[in-house]
Amino acid sequence: MHAAAPVLLLIHDFFPCSDACDPLRRLGHALVPLSREAYPKQFLALQGDGGSMLQETARRLDGLSAQIARGQPLVVCNNAHRFLAAQQLQDAGFAAAQLVLEPVGRNTAPALTLAALAAPADGVLLAMPADHVVGDVQRLHAALAAAWPLACEGAMVTFGVVPDRPETGYGYIRKGAALAGGGGYAIDSFAEKPGLERAQAYLAGGEHLWNSGMFMVRADLWLKALGLLQPAMLAACQAAVQGASRDLDFIRPAEAAFAACPADSIDYAVMEHLPGRADLGMPACVVPLDARWSDLGSWDALWEVLPHDAEGNAAAGQTLAVDTRASLLFSQSRLVATVGVQDLVVVETPDAVLVADKRCTQDVKKVVELLRTQGRGEAGSHRKVHRPWGWYDSIDAGERFQVKRIVVRPGASLSLQMHHHRAEHWVVVRGVAQVTRGDETFLLNENESTFIPVGRTHRLTNPGKLALEMIEVQSGSYLGEDDIVRFEDSYGRTTPGG
Image (tube, rainbow, N blue to C red; front, side):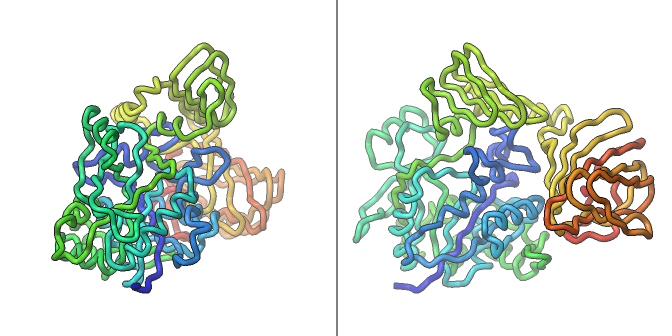
């Protein structure tokens, strides 16, 4: 058997990927108002007190059979979310993860290619999208154990979810002959998303599986197959990696070279060409996966995977259901109460509330389209905004003023900066702040405050071992985040934003 060490790859579909895909779904906008452009669903903890979807995906290999070697995660993600992804991985115990930053979106095949070029040549890549839910991890591990020898010996393996309903929202894979040793099948063919009648026939026939979008393949063989089938894509990715730069813990492929790369999915670019192509030297196999898998693309999908009460309701946060049935109630900051309703989705965040018929949740993305048309900011970001040093929450705002709650992680620092149009008052609520104001540097303790005049250079640092919490009151003629002139920044940022 070919000796190989796998690399865990998490693909983030943050960018619009091609004309053929639904960018709003890929950005997670079907889960608005929880998911926003600046904080997509992959970073959300949607199943109670657990970690985010990204963190849970990374942890999904915990306890994997010792026969399967395991490397550190290799993450391909949007440049705009690099600090958020890095912090969540560090918090989950994956500080050594590599992050490859897509400068533009080109769908999953180029993303996998970037990972293959960054991984050891004989490494096995396990492509796991970070927006999936797997309810039975032990069964996932069993499927991975069945796929492992197939991938090591040169097959490209996908995982086909055993269907439990005539789903029209997924593509399907038709199984071919069973492979020697059991555990997998040759792939006979692929099928696009079917109509209801055909989906019912697929379910009744027992020969079709849902296409999960998860893959296992050796890095060198993926690159070989791509070179034969999509040479322009391989050449563009190679040029992007050859011209890559590094800063902090990030690998940055060359933007111009990657932008010239054709956009396509793993399925369309390679996988669907493999059946019947012995000349390519990479058989296509599918391993069945029966592990309570879900692609969380809508609120009704989340309702399906959450625990239900006796009336069929799923709830998270502060909720109260009276004479309510088969509904999803989700609260972030306030009490949500329902009386005498059925089949509803009610989602509350500090700056928005969604109420929808559970049967119409696929249309929630239309709300995002309207928000964009009206020029509203809710489609882009939450009231609480994450930064590499911590986060801030805009708790109040009016004409010529804004109030923020700011939390700075231990040892972290905001950039040395200046504002042309606003002054700031800082009040320390908890912890110790080191303040740079012009030529002076001093400490502020709890219940102490300071004033930053318009045009004065300043910096805020947390020198302590506990989080620094403070209240900032801004006043002035313009309070936008683009009124920031940076002079120094610990995180290499050049654009405005704290």
